[in-house]
Image (cartoon, rainbow, N blue to C red; front, side, top):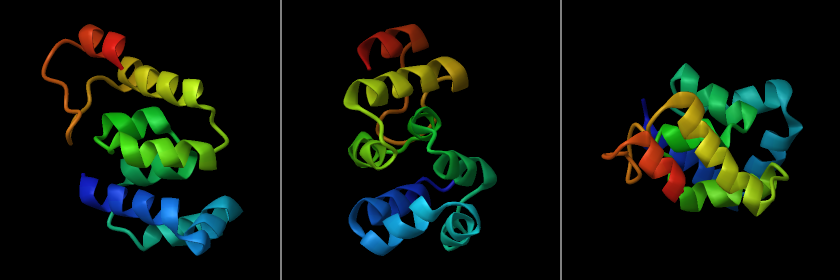
Amino acid sequence: MSLYSMQKFLYALNREPEVQRRYREGGAERDALLAGYDLVDEEREAIRDGDIGKLYVLGCNGQLLMHFAPLLGMPWADYLEAMREGVRKYGPVRAGIYAMTTSTEDKVAGV
């Protein structure tokens, strides 16, 4: 897993209009954009699909994700729920500053 590369991509996506354009275009253009980053398949798929919950579980910083969500057209409440759902669906946060050190139930309630 390449947490740094995922977060580097999201940082660029949140700030660079050309990266945003290529991501929004989807299809082959989105795939070509993501190919420029050192991502494993699970990470690439989560970014490609806009899976906020999976990205959260993979360890992406919430400050980056909270800017990615509006790009996806996701309202704030849905963004928060997507993180909770990610933990329910994929298990505890695996890496990064949100790595879970207590039970999943405790963290889901606190997200």
